[in-house]
Image (cartoon, rainbow, N blue to C red; front, side, top):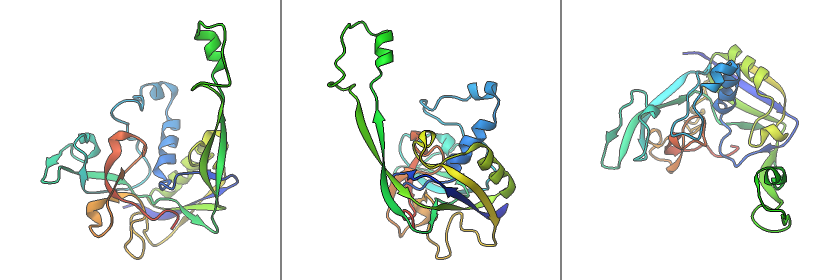
Length: 247
């Protein structure tokens, strides 16, 4: 087992999030991809496929039985074995030992507006029509509004290689949350502190600190969700429990 430690991100911009956890293995996977050479990056299969590559991260792994959808990919498990049960499909899955984000200090809910502009340049280049009505139709400009939070600091509880985790985040992850490349979620400073307690999976009360298989917490409500990064990819779906958002 690795070290137990805390990672803090001091923020200077609101974070765009749907309250889905902001687990640290997401930003760390981006950092792991950034470490690769350009030739290595080009060899990584696109995320539009049926499977997403698991990059090696400086974190320990947990594993447990998990009920899965009928379309589950065997690569989601530790041994490539899917068993049929009375309820459906089951396998032993794994994930990274890092909690969902925990806000430090007061949280203020807000929103982030984004102007979606029509792709006029592409229309001129590839289209054949001589006239374009920019004020109507599905391609007109519109404002998109996303939920966001103001918080001074986000914290994650982890188990693994503390120094390497801090180095990767500091070097390759300038912001967190959705739309992070457009300004929201900008991090002023990443810091690390080693601690004696391990809250990467459960807290002191035994409650889940991250998305985990529902079979680990039979008394908790079950919610379909994803168990490891990339959390938006369809190959990561399972029957899970979730930590209370911003608890």
